[in-house]
Amino acid sequence: MIRQITNPRELRGLAILSQPDTIIQTGKNEWDVRSQSKDAYYQVIRTFPKDRKARMHDPPSWICTCPDHTTRNVICKHIHAVQLSLKIAGDVKEKSTPAHIEETEQKVACPACKSANVVKRGIRKNGYGTVQRYGCNECGYRFVIDKGFCRMKFSPKTITLTLDLYFKGLSQRKIADHLKQFENTSVAQPTILDWIKKYLKLLSQYSEKYKADVGNIWHCDETTVFIKKEGKKKYYEWIWNLMDSKTRYLLACQVTETRYVKDARKPLKRAKEVTDVKPDAIVTDGLPAYKEAIKAEFYGLNDRVQNPHVRLKDFETKPNNNILERLNGTFRERTKVMRSLDTEMAATEFVTGMQIYYNYIRPHQGIGGLTPAQMANIPINLMGNRWETMIGLASGK
Ligand SMILES: [Zn+2]
Ligand SMILES: [Zn+2]
Image (tube, rainbow, N blue to C red; front, side, top):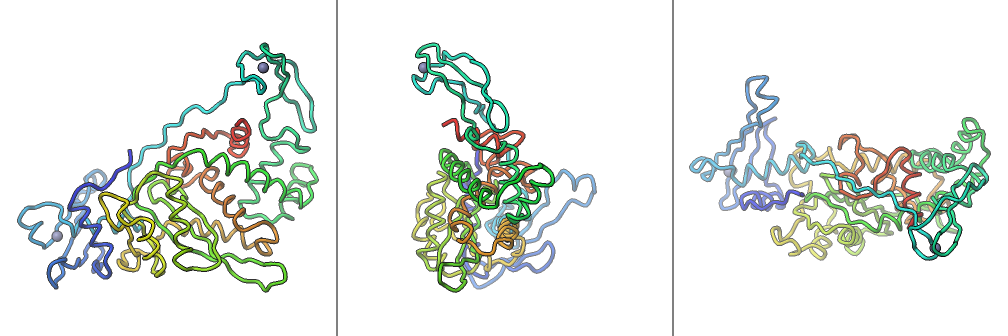
C-alpha cells in the first residue's frame, strides 16, 4: 500500500513547504521554520542517538521551539515540514515493499478458435534457429507462437543486444562494429533503426495496459534536446519528465516546442492516465509555467491536499540532489551520439523508447537493483534478457 499523508499536522507541514522562504537550514541538524501566524521563526533541531549501536536502530529525535511542540510534546507542523523537505530532497529513504509479481507466462491457445486443446507438432527451422509448431485438436489449425521475432532474419539475441546498446548510448556505427566483432553478424545501420522503431512501438502499446502504483511525492522538470528539421537551422525542443520519488517510475516523458503553461500541462495530464494516485506534492524547479499548470490539472483533485505544487527553490535544503538528475544523464548519454533527433527518429518516438528502457529494462541502484516498473507493482514479470522477455509477452497479445 502506498503511504498517503493523513495526519493533519503533517498536512499543515506540507502546506508550509508550498510557500516561499519558509524553511532555512542554519546548521547540519538545525532549521528555522517561519511561523504561519506571526512574523517569527521557530527553530527545529534534529538529534541522533549518542550511542553508536543505538544510532543504527533508533531514529533521530526532533524538537521545535513552537508552543505546539513545547507544551504538547507532539511532532508539530514545523518538524513535519522539515522532514518532508528532507524526504523530497531525497535525503531520507522511504521504506517500500518490493512488488508482488503475478505470473504472466501465457498458456498456449489456438489463434483460430481460442481452444486450449493444442498439441506440439514438430519444429520449424527459420533463419537463426528453430520454432515450436502447434496443432489445434478442435479445429485442426496449425500455428507457431510468435515471440516477436518470427519473421526476422536475425536472432533475438542480436536484436535485443542492439536495443540495449542503443539505449546505453552507443552510436549506430559502434553498434554495427560491435555486432561484427563479437557476434560475427553484419547489420546495416538503417536496419538498426528499423528494429528500434518496430520494437519500441510494440513495447509502448503493451506497457499502456497497466496502471502504475506509485508514491505521493512526484518531481517534474524539463530539459532540452537537439532537433534538426528539414530546411531549418538546428534548434532545441523541451523534454518534460515527471517522476515518482518512491518508485522512481517515470510517469510521463513529453516533448514540446515551447515552455508555456499549455506545455507544462502535458506531462501532468499524461500522469493522470498512467496512475490513479493523486500526489500530495509535485516538486518543481522555479519555472513559472508550473504554477498555473499544476493548478489547472491537480487543484482540488486530492481530498487531502488542495494544491500539491512545491517549488524546490523555496526550501534550499539540498536542491542539487534532484532525483531526476540521473535520468537526465541517461538522456544526455544517448542524445550526444545522435547527430540530432528527428533525422534519426521522431523526438516523441525517442522519448517513448527512453521511458520504456528506464522504467522496465534498466535496474536502478537507488531502489535495490529493481526496475521502477517492479517498484510500481506493474505485473510484467521480466527475467533474464528483459528485452526479449518483454517483446515475447507483448507479441503474445
Ligand atoms: Zn513547531
Ligand atoms: Zn482451433
